Image 1: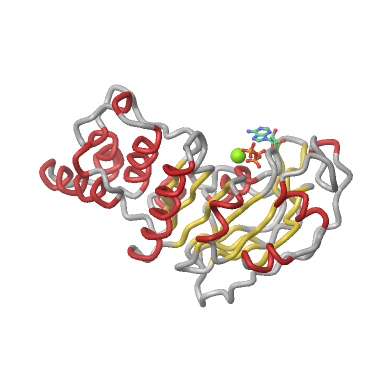
Image 2 (image 1 turned 30 degrees about the vertical axis):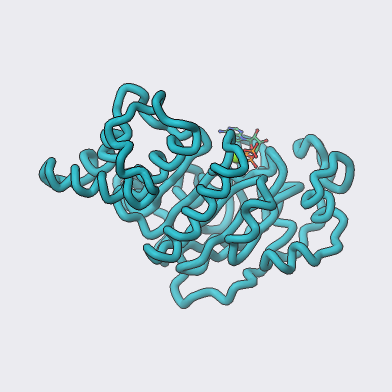
Length: 268
Ligand SMILES: Nc1ncnc2c1ncn2[C@@H]1O[C@H](COP(=O)(O)OP(=O)(O)OP(=O)(O)O)[C@@H](O)[C@H]1O
Ligand SMILES: [Mg+2]
């Protein structure tokens, strides 16, 4: 699969499978195309070549079918996207009000259940400004879970959080994935926090996927590019400005985790 933005190729030769029930981490330096890859999974960006499948079905191009597919995908964006003049509970209720015809008391119960799932049952009546950054992130997570999506996409879930709040979010993501039987894709440049909960890791750099494997395989790699990224060094095979980088010869990406018979998503 190839992903372009305007006339620019952001990622090419992308080949990835997200097995059901697993957590896939997409790591890579800033500007390497991680968010762009998520946009392809939600159908927001159509691939310039190749195809994307979610739940065994090609991502539709027609708007209405796309909206239907997106109900099955929970997205936690970099900014929490909470509406500031609504309470935490009202924020979580939004997708339920928009996409279901459930009676208000049922929605109220579901909202409390979702808040409970992220450890914030008592925060329903608080406004976003009354929440800490970590709590606000968890409310956004509860909202992303509102419609019980089988696939969760997280774009930089740790941005702006201290190490303790980061630990809370990461263990929550892992626990929700296991208890609700979800499939998750986590985009992050927080390598240390993300690797421990990931089943498979993809690293994007120099306009492609330069690594696909398990966290242990990544840690053990002696590829200079991966070492540079893991150690966070400014100089090395990853160019600071990816737009001007000479294209790096990408190692063919093959999913390390054996794919379940029907993967949650697949991009070729
Ligand atoms: N809507 C857009 N229109 C044009 N170019 C875009 C658009 N979104 C992203 N890009 C470009 O695509 C490239 C990859 O961006 P992307 O946001 O996917 O990177 P990223 O890996 O998520 O970075 P970060 O870690 O900083 O979030 C960048 O060079 C960016 O300028
Ligand atoms: Mg991004």
